[in-house]
Length: 474
Image (cartoon, rainbow, N blue to C red; front, side, top):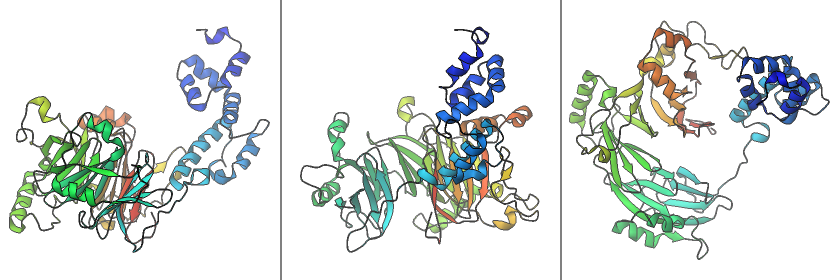
């Protein structure tokens, strides 16, 4: 490979015309020579990159370019160099992701209900078959075509309870039924592939429901149709559950534990207690309360569970009183353990209790500041405003993790949004919080007080969506 001083600068600049911004950033990090070269010729290099990205036209000046990008020109008002234009464009892309502005705004498609109308409760999308699955206020499950709203297949309200929860992933549909059970149904289109490795074991109730399922799709078309696969009998009372293929996480509020199913094989691969998130005194108090009122009465105690989530390495639990993250272990089959031996409490790697969210009366709430833009993204509270005054009660509602397990988003009913950028780095820092690491570590946890009451949350690793209480939009 030729050294930088062996080629003319004109030839190097001609080659760099074909590099995009991420590649230019990588080039600058190769060596001091390359970093100095990019810095010396940054006006030429970044102008050509702007042309390559389609931000500007050949022959346009920097001033004319900022005027052309009029939809978000406030980000570019202070652009003095072509590199500033690149920085402004990064913020524009962030704005578009959050605000769905310009050509990034997704199209709106309505899926209409049949008559008499029913209210959807839980909604899931199948992007492969382009269908919409939903439970309803009167019971049953309806599968509709995403494009035409046509009902393709449905289960009777006599088989699925009203306001049933629904989980869906990789062609598997899971919902709860009385008796602490979960029904598993699978797309008919993938039966041949699935049958090569696993056997179907539906019970008679599922088979009867399948026979009486309403089929309105054209004859021979399997799109939107489901077949009964199995019934999972949970070992304890079910409070919340979450399915991320192939694992179904089930949480029991009564026994303060979770168990994880491998759904295709219909086996429990892991179970452990959640008691490590609480002190000994708190656990004793909750156990006494449970003995007094029994397991079937709704409780609002410290161990009340609102939501659960899982990644390949951790389990996330939204208790009413705190958000706790537990380290997952190996499955019992691989270690030779039985269920009781593997049910000990797992290590709590992160805990956000109510007191952390509320802070204290002496700590005012400060807005997070974007130092690159030198502007606040939310108003700074008055010096006498504190979480302790604003949030006398904190109720964690939901938590989701990105597909890679690194980004975590959680919300409280009172309107506080938590965002963790690099979960593994935060956990590593908490395990060994030396002064040197704390000083050099980049911020990994952000809190944003939105003053909006959150109810539901969705997060795909790039975009956050949530529903609010008492509002007509999200």
